[in-house]
Length: 396
Image (cartoon, rainbow, N blue to C red; front, side):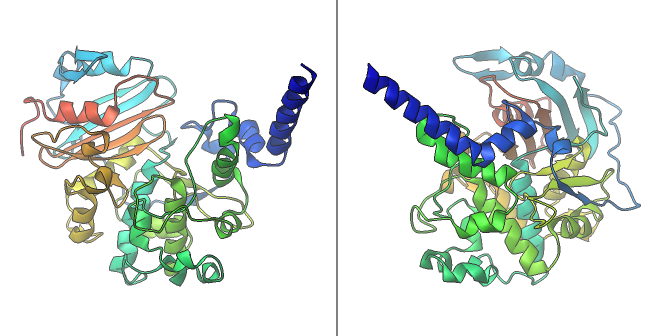
């Protein structure tokens, strides 16, 4: 019994000792025990993404899709069978807003709780898909020569570290094949504490570059798909180094202003001292401005007649392909969860707590859902895929 108590005291001492010296406790103080939510950007240091004087607004369709509230279309055994959109979303999802746009017009729009059409929300890992867009633009402009460039060409300080950095390419970052020993874990179990600390440091630490310099590799880059946010964070730094512009400024110049965003955006940064953007998950914007990213992709990289990013980049990101677990250039298709290919498949960006930007080019549809959390069994992109494939949305 005595030995048992001593061991328990040792474990507790170890846990509290680690927490007192790491970013976990900072995260707890900043965002509470439930972690970050879509409005917690107000507690974080961030840069502003300026919008321009010209504003594009989606018009409302004369015929609203009121049938969505009564259509029993969603089936996901064993928990859901012939459910409506509202029945599914109300299953412990704490949804804040749903926006559906077809043919450049709003056909369905609902808000709950604290959200409003002009309120900024953090979209978490949907940010990765926007970072990918910015990478494509940087390649089009010649700041980045190729997706097959070594990351160390843009972060030369890595050349003095593990030789594996010379093998890591931008393509590997885009496809989550970095080989880095990093996990997006949120588990408080003792065996995961070290990895949780690393994830917390990425979100709450004040010097991301220092964290990157200390990273190790678990396998050779390009050999295995393993989703982890650090890959997208490094990609954001590559874009900053290549363009010689702050992430927020480059995003403002090449995306926010050309797409005529209605509101400014925000991106979290590690600290005022270092100013490294959270390219992996720190973007905050309105739902309607997020829909403009979807509209740009629907139009294959063209915005109102002006080329923003190459069609090749859009195609590489979004054409249906089951390789790499359905994940390409920071965008997913539904093969990522093993779902059969729909008659009219779409693609999507996804963030924690089920922040979703879904695009279906066959039906000319954009669907968005944001929420504080999502404890339902329904997978929101799959919900949107089934809705978009209903006969009520005609093929374009």
